[in-house]
Length: 488
Image (cartoon, rainbow, N blue to C red; front, side, top):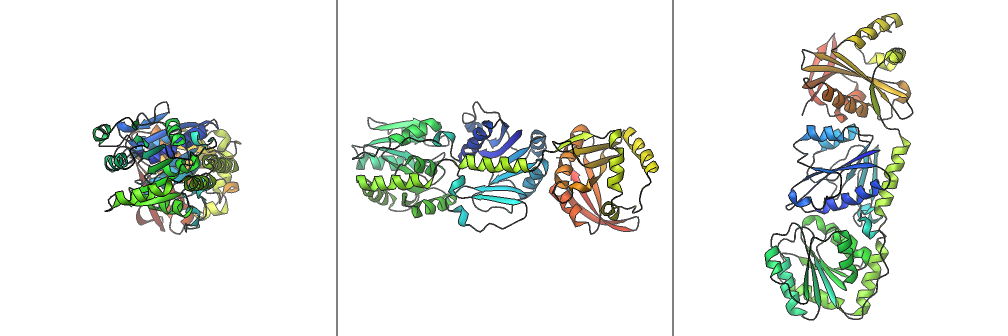
């Protein structure tokens, strides 16, 4: 099966989104999925993605290219603070199943799975919506695979090594903190993680010494090794906190951004961290010294380490993927093919169903001989394209017909097999068919749909498939609503 992961990151945005997406990349690869990472980022992310199937470009602006890449994917994962709901809806309509990472209840998400693996997320009030499943809390935290298994930790009687790590962007605070620690604890070894987005690497380099080791851009295995060697850590409040807890490193946190505050509060409540304050606070260094001194005793570090390890087990990615795969198995993947003679009878039956005639301009039953004549004419026409949607069992789900007008725009209509109504398939079939049609007909710039007013189900399906309301009008004495899908 095919999976696409859409995310973002870089020097100015940090690398947390990419890091957790990489954990899902590896997890799905182990399940034999063909996975592609699509990253809105700069050159600083290239090393992180080395050896991974990926593409780096601004997919928020180049949406046509994005949708082309999504193509026939079965699953899409979106991890973004920047994408709008319209994009989420379009992605949802293109794939069989959509998954969204959330940290701040940022949007009212479309159908699919919403994952918030933050500590305490299960207590947040997410809206109950049909078709939306929530995977919340520490049971679904996406740790990198290197942290799924961690050896038993040995707590030293005395503090010999402390770790300093502030993620991808340290707000230029590392030199200030490091100088203070060198002066205050001269006999303790400091192992400093230098992130890819740091803008003060030269200044940090000048502080290197016999007991001050600088670690530039370590990978997951490198981070795990540093954590296993550290007696305590000084960290930002982001994703690294979860890895520190998994390894059991007693930690003092300095807040660097607003979105870290829920993490900090959650880990404080769990009894794993001490909070020294905000990175711009007055008296921060005095608070930091006070918290470091509290962690120097063996028993205190032993207790903190135990609480961290007891809180998170490193199986969050596996649990989330199990749920996603289970949801995929409940349904069937969607495939499109061009219509053929064997479909003629089925299209006639679907068209003559009472519900289909109710929302058609011509509400009379169609005679089969007339239908055959119509079908053969449309099948031969260069301006008509009919796609039949099928599932993996080769069951016919419905048909979508495009009629090209004046060379550069087309009408669209859809009719579902009544056996598959009320399964939220209409929008998915429409979305896939529209994108397929536009790929195969490059001169067509716009697709239009005419929906009888009052057909709310049809309107919602077109909306979810990325069509936008245009206007209300009259046709053949009926009130209609016009929707449009425009290329790019």
